[in-house]
Length: 303
Image: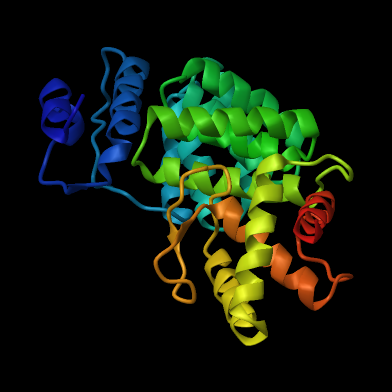
């Protein structure tokens, strides 16, 4: 059912009388399936059942009503999911766990129920269990961007190197399949965090040629700018970095007021900031590990 009117037409006895129907459209599918489950459970004897009010509510009132629903249709996964969601909205994830598990037990093929349980377990710090349910969810709903993103986020949270690499691949899937969406932007930010982490743990002695070139160019730029302006450049980059610099995208797209007329890539700006920090204090932690590249670029400048 796509709208309340179709549902009322199909099950008119459930909406007898003058009742209000008001809820977020995303709940239409869940509510529709709940109504039909109740209809099936009642059988031929409808026992005068009808809704007195249908409104989206969270909190204790919603839980009471949904618990009455599962008493009539105990195998209805979406009703159990609703109870779990209500508890989560009340800030009680521990109480949400049991009904969310009941939702999955009622219908293991329900991708949404699996996703909700996976997200809840992740929030409770049970990462391995979370991944199991989120993988099942993605198998059931491979075309849902939130499901793919949720699995990627859980993999990233695990901290395992192989899992983080898989997470990065899934973020790329989200960006490529659903460009321009809010979840794609979240995936870009997540990839940037992964890239920054990789830069901080960059293996000593392993030289990245593009970073060498960026640092070599930064050494010349900062030398020409002088000490005062170099500090201004570094400060502007640091402030810009607070909003996130996309160091995965090689395209130049960032501008600096302190260096007008030039456009830089995210990795280029990070390299310039690293160079500026090291020139002030060679022992300072610049947030990334470009020691090998800095050494090579400095040697090039001295030749």
